[in-house]
Length: 412
Ligand SMILES: *[C@@H]1O[C@H](CO)[C@@H](O)[C@H](O)[C@H]1NC(C)=O
Ligand SMILES: *[C@@H]1O[C@H](CO)[C@@H](O)[C@H](O)[C@H]1NC(C)=O
Ligand SMILES: *[C@@H]1O[C@H](CO)[C@@H](O)[C@H](O)[C@H]1NC(C)=O
Ligand SMILES: *[C@@H]1O[C@H](CO)[C@@H](O)[C@H](O)[C@H]1NC(C)=O
Ligand SMILES: *[C@@H]1O[C@H](CO)[C@@H](O)[C@H](O)[C@H]1NC(C)=O
Image (cartoon, rainbow, N blue to C red; front, side):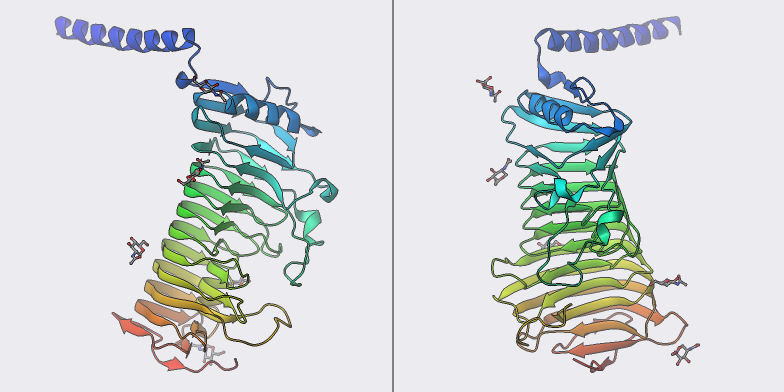
């Protein structure tokens, strides 16, 4: 017994000492691989919510980026008035840059300060991580009145709260965003981007406050998110491949959306999207694919699966809309040239707030190919059967599907 304790003690001492020795050695070598830390407070951040702390954040970023190995930027608790700011790479000798964000970052309410359409931008960095439970507060309420983009085609876009552009291997974990002026987050031209346990919140009637917009990216995963906002909880735009959305609670908002696609000439194809294990509550749409009519070029969107989704009180639980035109005049009425194929709706259940639970309105120029509904069971919220409308598509059914009988859309 005594001998055993001694052994345990010896082992413990050795482990502690070894760890200490290694840390001491790394510190002595000035080796950032052991974790050099840059605290925004050290660089002069006041954290009083009134003084502009942009310079302190920029200096901490520059020091961390010019360092090497695994580095950390600390944002302690407190309110920081900031931006607009761009945190740029490359950080050539940094292998991982972790921002431990425990504070609340506040955007200016003065729109005149924003020269472009972003509040905080991360550009061209490999290995960024953001964690710490902190909040990005876009202070958008006053700007929402000035937003015209939900009404007009040619509009001045308001700033997105946080944009990630041309980033590789990014991980965002346990972060909150409230009241953005426009989108909460945008992931543009990124490779391998993961967000887990994020919470995005804005009022139901705030215009264009999409939760997370993804575009031109490969290997994006959003797993574990609570999103209640004024527009799409997640919108997956053009040029994306290999995207996984799972364990999202969405509502209020406009649902989990692919698109809109087919608005611009430069758009690229969309391939390999999986949206699963999610709950959508009291939203305008559930799962949606929307493409513009009169699209300038032909693109494809294929291999898209929506699986294991619970709908409660959703106005359009399942909707493919290829006649999207939110404005009075979208130009000529040419059909959408976005070709949709291999679309799977699997195990989707719950209630529709309107009698039409499933809308499949495909392009008359390019009918949808291989649209499958398997184990889809949706009821009108008062308990009556709901209906399914179809245009330019012959859906395939398997398992238990209700509604199952295609009717023509009432007006196109
Ligand atoms: C990166 O490390 C190399 C080799 O240690 C060094 O020569 C170079 O100056 C460093 N670059 C930066 C930007 O710190
Ligand atoms: C990200 O990866 C792409 C393709 O591998 C590469 O062209 C680009 O330079 C990388 N960017 C960064 C910031 O590492
Ligand atoms: C379809 O997408 C899934 C991911 O959602 C991927 O695993 C699969 O390889 C893709 N198949 C094709 C033919 O692109
Ligand atoms: C259904 O959703 C609407 C918003 O679309 C909301 O106003 C209403 O309270 C919800 N009803 C229930 C029973 O949740
Ligand atoms: C549900 O509402 C529809 C349309 O308002 C009505 O025709 C139907 O009888 C209602 N069903 C029940 C069970 O109340």
